[in-house]
Image (cartoon, rainbow, N blue to C red; front, top):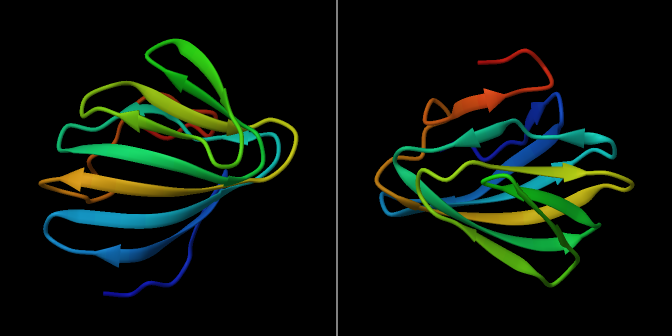
Length: 114
């Protein structure tokens, strides 16, 4: 598997580890940007904040997370993360049965993706 960084309109991510049961990514979110408001059919996620102040939306509730804090995102739950003032770096641990980028159902997206 190629572990090169993947660039997105909101920042970038790099896969650190991947197997049939899990995938681990390091994700950098550019200041003023946010990921799409989305959910996944085949995976749950755990986010651990490394640096920056993250604004996390989980099923409509907004939570602020700082370095050292984490949050669990159950399979099928709507979620997004934003970097409002400075870059946010976090580790994402995915567990489930499928980890492809096509397991993203976008409900809202700042960049016109669906």
